[in-house]
Length: 466
Image 1 (cartoon, one colour):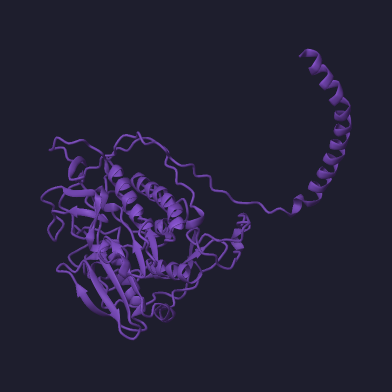
Image 2 (spheres, rainbow, N blue to C red):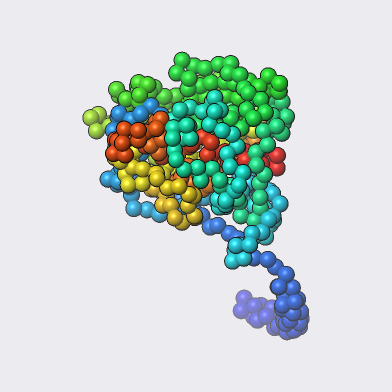
């Protein structure tokens, strides 16, 4: 065996000498070619957001008072303890890439590098001054009183004069006439909680500058409603489904709860599922309601709860239920053979400062923030992380099944608008009784008109160029 090995070595040695010389020549040519062309490569931006796989994390418990207002969604106070961990946001997949718009370099962007693939993320940008002002006025009949900041006496109007500007591209303002023409003989539904209701009011007000919608349906509490535009045979609906899964909610109209909510994490809410295939476009969202105290069911058996100290149940945390419910919803969507377009809207942050909604928190700012100036609360990081991870998994499956599922990621542009909320002006002229009046502020919903109109700018861009 040894002799045979040496014979093979000597035989190959001569060939190796020749091959080695040829290899040196080829390497020299390759090196010269690389030097002559390297200056033509443009740098490529990467956002390395590693996936989080910590399935064994401890449940996260948040305690809330139970006397919140009907339209208010409670948030944890400063005493809430979260695990000390780093939150990572996963990368968006190819299926969730934003629409492509024409690149428009800005004078102040010389120190930033535009994406080498020519694509522009319309969800990353800044708020820049705009002279156009409000897209409609406070007389729009679909504005509900708590969001009508101008009529309620908010003294400043500077928050109306800003425009969302993505980096390296631009998006046009929402064109209500063009939108209605595109939606002729079609239907929309916005499905979720009171933020979805806030959004549809904005959309209806913008469309009312062309034609006034006719309300054709409402439930007994006016939470789910539907409107029709006769000239275009276009209908738009808002469907009240704050959890998206089946839920028994024991709250009165003022939001006072007599018991924990009961969530069936393996059953979808029929209020939207029964009409699912009848809509051409849907915007689905959820989030903050999962922070409320609740008991969780699966297969009609109790799994545990989120903050139920008076019950002998396993504390699972809101993150457990949110991931489980969102995964169940996404699995239904990707396998549903749906032929329209579904937008999954990320949850949006509140801007309570100096406390929460029930502990004296306020939102008194009068101008947008710049990136890095507003801290992302831990609870919002957790919700967002779950949303992006579950969407990422669903997007890959949706493309296989031919389902048009898109990410409507409004978190960042909303985060930078602490000035856009009603604050104390959720009530009519709240300081008529004096500046020291005890008031509840709203730093979650949006003034109408206000920054939420940019959501419709982005939606139209995604429909036209997405």
